[in-house]
Length: 383
Image 1 (cartoon, helix red, strand yellow):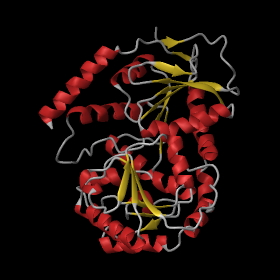
Image 2 (tube, rainbow, N blue to C red; image 1 turned 45 degrees about the vertical axis):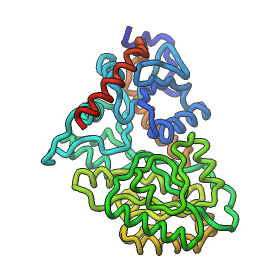
Image 3 (tube, rainbow, N blue to C red; image 1 turned 30 degrees about the vertical axis):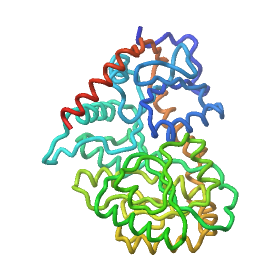
């Protein structure tokens, strides 16, 4: 049965409350939201949180009722159906531009269009909306065609709580982290050639962590690739590794595609800089508009990237060690961002008259396997 539970045993609004997190999975959950929820639970600000996956299986701090519902990115069809039926006040976090431009010549179709409809519903119905980029919030509001005023709030990505131990002198490695394969454009390939030229001068390798198109990987004469790291392994890598970071992104895509890039967050600058990793970034808004100190390559021209990387290498490890102590990262500590997140959740809680009970039958594994097979077939037929 879905719906509210009796309010007899509900704690007062000043006591820790319980969160129901409708988690779709992916980096946004593991790197952005889960650490904040874990910190709030450890500090006793929330009484715990239960996680509902895309198939409506529930785990974590399961309770009879929940005071706050949290959704993020693109809820699954079953999660969205539950939100529609239960109709609780909920918080919604979004970290990418997932709405089409209504003025674009080509409309979105298939799964992409369906996801956009889900995002639009969440934006229109959420009690509070958070995102890591002011540009993203403004663009979502414009494309939605409805005001987010009074409901939206900037929730920046966190770095690390405290600077790591100072890095020792030595030959640095280059590091490129990417959660999604970057488009293989002429200017990205040009930047890669500049990075490769720099690593040849330094006499070092580049470590690629995440997803990279073959055309990008092939640009480097000396490289190693790690497809995935658990969040704690990744944070330890940044804290201990002798790295210079690089983050090439396209600058000349078609308008709708470039808007997607421009609305990304400065998460790499937060991760790298707070961990003592000085980096070079493409001249795109996530970094040119960031409040964090960022070394921006003038263009994606190979020579600009070569010179920028060599300049950072010339300061290694002092540049990164100084960067980790920069005052800007104090405002990006997880404890600071978690307090801002707590304020958002508290406002959603205040809007709910009673705790919400969650009861649902998870999707059987057989049905999920059939769905995956159908999607794979559809992708091959309509690519």
